[in-house]
Structure formats: C-alpha cells, structure tokens
Length: 188
Image (tube, rainbow, N blue to C red; front, side):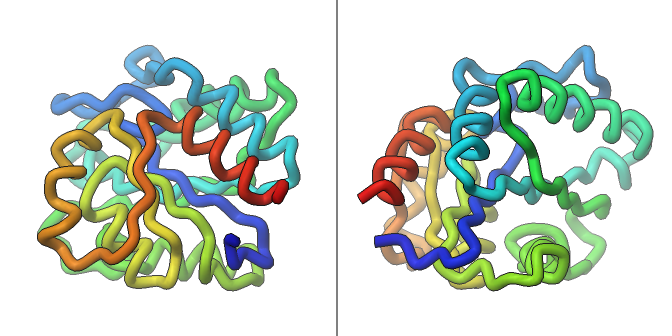
C-alpha cells in the first residue's frame, strides 16, 4: 500500500505531461500535451489527490523565455485540466541553469521541500512521476516512491535504473497508465 497521508502526487512536466523538446518549450503555442495526460491529471484530482508539478525550467536562466511566458504555459495546462473537472494544486519550478549550484534543481530536493512547506504535509511515500533519472533521484532522496513513465526520456532512463541504486521504481508506459495504477492502489 501507498504510505501517503497527504494524498499528493508529484509530476514532472516536460516528457510526462507534454511533449519535450531539445529546443525547450518557450510559449503556450509550443506546449503540446501528451495523449491522455490531461485526463489523467483530472482523474487523479477528482479522486481526491492533490496534484503538484515539480519541474526544472532552465530556459528561464538561458533567456529563452521569461516568467510571463512560463505562466502562460502553465495557465494553458491548468485550464485544460479544469475543463475536465480537475485541479492542479501547485506548480513549483527551478528557474536556474544546470551549473547554478542551487538546491531546487532536480535531482536536488528543494522543490519537494517547497511543496511540503506550501501543503504543510510530508511527501514521504508520495508517488513522484517523471521521465528522467533526476526525477527518480529527487523522489528517492526525499522518501517518495519513484515512478517512471516511458514517454519523453523515459525509455532511455529505464535502462539506467539498475545502475543508479534507486531501489524499487514503478514503470508505466505513460501518465494515463500510471494514474490508473495509482487510483487502483488507493482504492484497495
């Protein structure tokens, strides 16, 4: 069983909810949800889970987009979820580049600490769903259950799990399949 008294699920954004791009997602027009991802978020929310995002957004530090553009992207995402009767309870992002040495860029756990402070609840045992090694490492380091989806960078990441001492990692084809499994588990 899931040890998740706060009933929170943490999602990475790029490659999990929307198509990722080596050129970065810089505007709402470039942001494209993956099939089934928006309905998966809405299903999780309607089931009483608090859905939060934890995402590295180094495009800010690189000057590729500004916080207004990022806000517009997130408004599009949350609007789509709300139209399906769900809610995103928070979006937490690291605006720093890879060499900034901050504590919020995954695999560091600063974003998870911010989420705990905002929700006033421990994330221990919560599912952290991502597509990259840094998502799994951040989740594991903070006591979350790491969950890998094979979308985005997930297929490449799946090959790295055994060599990175991550313990038990749940693996699903996409966010929709992961959401179905989580909802089935909390219903048991």
